[in-house]
Image 1: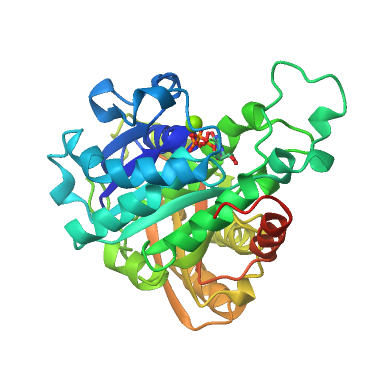
Image 2 (image 1 turned 180 degrees about the horizontal axis):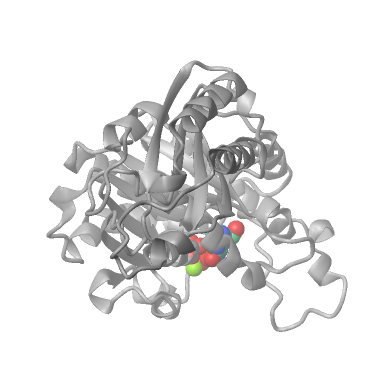
Length: 379
Ligand SMILES: Nc1nc2c(ncn2[C@@H]2O[C@H](COP(=O)(O)OP(=O)(O)OP(=O)(O)O)[C@@H](O)[C@H]2O)c(=O)[nH]1
Ligand SMILES: [Mg+2]
């Protein structure tokens, strides 16, 4: 499928950047990637081409909004329409879905994204998904910030006392507006005591790997076509259009591919892969995808619907094992909507499983709501 990505605010633009970098060379899935921020210097820190970046907002807020969500909303509402005109979008028609990326907790992304998504929903028939990070406790809770126990080095992050309240307020505004909300919890992905500034690139790579695994799918590029193609309408059926909270799972394993690389193409026959080895690789990655660390910690049992994509070098994609993986996912989730497919990657050196859990419930969201109640309300 083809995806248009719009990043908003510091986190949103960096994540958009990472998704661009994660696009497989043998399997393009992005129409265009854009970056929007009120903060020029943050925008210039991305490698998104200048033609695809747009600095917006009144001049007095260059440098960001420092967590003032109310101001962020005012700016977002005033500029949402203009933002879409400020960049060339000739390929927009080709997109099967739009993904708006944002870090919840700040003011620029959180203030703009609800208005931007609402505008996009009016202008297009394709689903508009939001990819949102949740703030880590150390950002707004001094007691949880171990980097503050020692001398605060240059790498320490500025505290964001409003982060939880902002995140909760923005999530509420996205409800009923975003087609679905894919979440990534910084709390769970940063290491203990690690400042966001130090860990964010790693987190963004992890997140981008998952996004690429789900949205690059198995269909429409050159090269072998999947036996069961997961297309845009399959993703849409699983994540729905009711602002479901979505968690992503992922597992991979490096596999031997040297057999296919020798012979300079003279030996076109697929390498001999031991069936039991292929089956065991797929079992392993599917288990990691469902039971390993999710983008948002939750019990898969709470999911209403699920999608499984198993990818890798074609010779490794054992049909029976993939079908068994689907059954494993089906029994892991409480709901009953399951789809699955495969994603051949002839140039890949790993077998992977990407898991989409839609409509999940998470205690982390409850904890953020409680923290928001304790800190200053954003409204
Ligand atoms: N995963 C990840 N999270 C980030 C990154 N940068 C910031 N965050 C998270 O996103 C939240 C919002 O931060 P920013 O995106 O910098 O904020 P902004 O939207 O630019 O808003 P202001 O700077 O307040 O105007 C933070 O509270 C962090 O939780 C990043 O690169 N990766
Ligand atoms: Mg910013």
